[in-house]
Image (cartoon, rainbow, N blue to C red; front, side, top):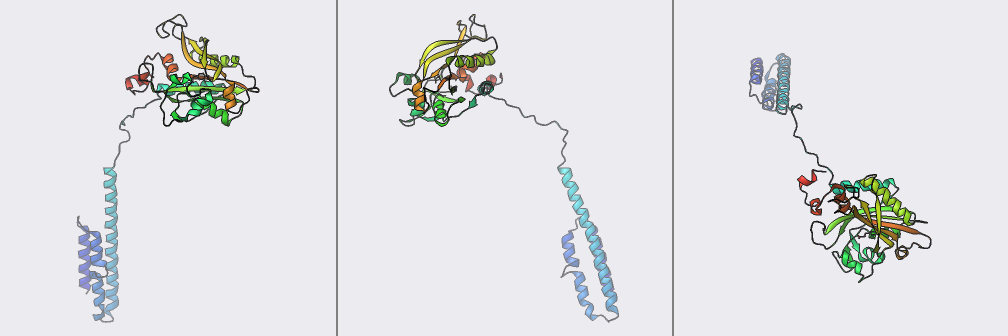
Length: 337
Ligand code: DAH
């Protein structure tokens, strides 16, 4: 029996040294419940009482030795596996990376942010309104009843008889005045729609920025001062503004406002088409009917409003001569800003 134990030990230890040793199978085969060592211990009943403790102790020693050798081998294998993995996953962090190209803001977004900053600096807040709008807000509340000729120039896309894609940002004026009582000082930039064919100066989708101030004692000089400050900040300190009488149904009196050409300073050039002036917006004193429609008493309050085309201001500012360039996403164009 002692010889048998000796044999088991030697066999197990030598197998453990083999390169392709399956440690788990080996453990089961030698040390498991049905393993060789257990088989020997089962046979101990045949021994004499004197031999039993001697063989028992030897069996324990053999088990301990095999277990120890097995643990060493398993640990070695684990370490080897880890080292192999580390070698496989080695990463040279000093290698040059794949550069990712940075994009930047679209010129229209840039111009919009710049304009927002200027008005925020004058105490304005930004208001938003829906692009899908009711006829009421886009037209009726703004003193443009059905069949009014002003609707012809602002033909848009209708979803139902009463719901349309807004043709101007002016409906936001009404929405703000309905919710808020004076003092009101807001701008509202956003998309507007008209059923115009796309050409160098027209697009069925473009952007406007509306402005509205309502308070006690607001006069046309407040409008002039505000727009002059804006024009100087946007186009340069030398810029002058000019008011030309005009008509909008929702303002009275109304004006179209030009800025002196920032390229030639007013002498006349290609950008201003020889005029010396560039039209940038419509404006006026909020019509008493509009105030009334929004529940504001025109005997107590007065206000001014203005609306400008974002594309127009941006094209003027950067000398862009075709509105389509804004929407084509041609990198050769966009990269220039
Ligand atoms: N909504 C006008 C348009 O699209 C522009 C405009 C004119 C807005 C006068 C105003 C204003 O607020 O007072 O043509």
